[in-house]
Length: 144
Image 1: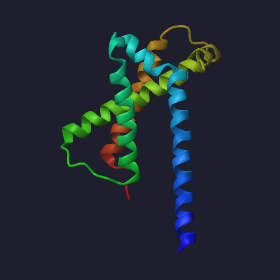
Image 2: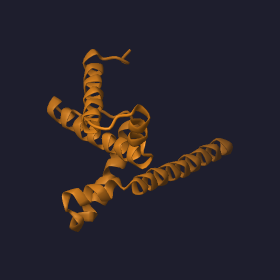
Image 3: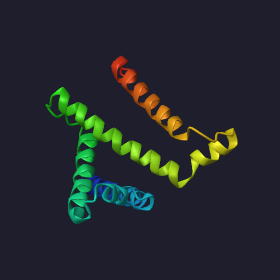
């Protein structure tokens, strides 16, 4: 009986410590990429920095609870759609910030000899990603 309790306590300690390490890495990546500061700069809301901090913390806690405990929320399709939109904007921001940091687009354009229309290429890629995601959701690909 004593060994089972110790094993559970050790597993809890390892899981808790791992969570702190992962969370620290994610926050460091967000700060390093400048995602939050860019949002603040574009929206001119530097005076509401505490709201950003609270939103990030609450989003992390909610995401953890929804994924670890397999909870379901009784919300309508509009709320679900709005949540999906906000999650998509957030993930798109990460992707664009990463692409900007590693300078992917200028390298590709230089290699392919593209000198004009880069903004249209980015818009086309974004539209393709959105339409592919919507088609995947509509067709329920990946569902058992």
